[in-house]
View 1 (cartoon, rainbow, N blue to C red):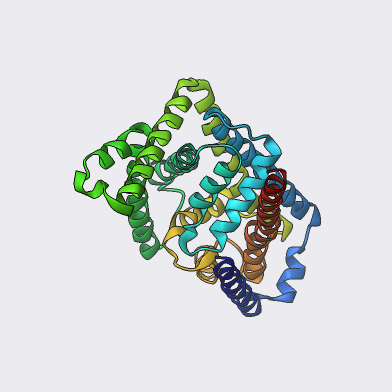
View 2: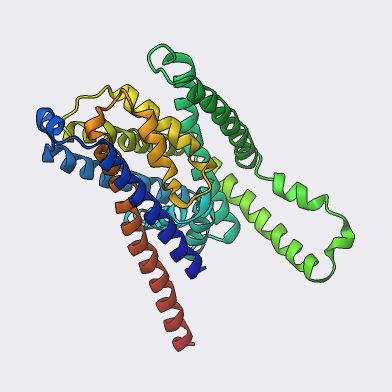
Length: 340
């Protein structure tokens, strides 16, 4: 696992850096940059502040979901869990490592395994609800203002339909928590023997814990769920809000709606890119999407700035957080063995 993560980091960072440098080389125009008044450093400082605010918001949401199911995770620990699971997402193809990593970290911080998986899926489901609002907005209210090419329009339609299907599947697990128990109950009794039977019984126990965790969450009342949903919405508004701020940092007053809508479409498509961190493909896609929105002279620098704050910096912080979490777990295990 450690080797795979290192390989994922190497592939992801290498592709991202190479493609970003090629884009800068192909688009950079020093004379145009001087005319645009490049680099207003205050906006880059604001973008950094927004990133850390977004981390704090997500840390709070992660802790709220866990504590609603009986956990005891404070805000700072929630931030470290977010950074750690983000690291797992960035170094695995299509971000497949995010939910397992968060469930594992929830479990290591006091939640039972079934409840940990339930908490991770609930967080993912609420994120999908926030994105569903964005899909509706683009399809219904912003069709006249946000224009894409024919290929991009068709791509967005396909991605949105697949997203809707995954949303309904996710909703089935969250809104009908006993669906896993019912699935296991229908398995043939002859399968309950041997090692497979032991595994099945363990899974049935965890499915029960999954259902119990969700029941505890729903019993907390609508106000808690509303707070969690609002935190998710606030996180993504802050996250995408960095785009116009970075554009201003490069001396460009671009249309915020066009910037955010384009990046939203790309974010929806990220799970379909089978490269860790969507490296290389995302930079090229941004170059295509932002033509006409950002001047060519700053396009490569704009893409590199966005990736610096939302990928490179998060990758570093996530690696530090993940290593700290694993070291703390190993250190605690050694102390417990010494006491025993």
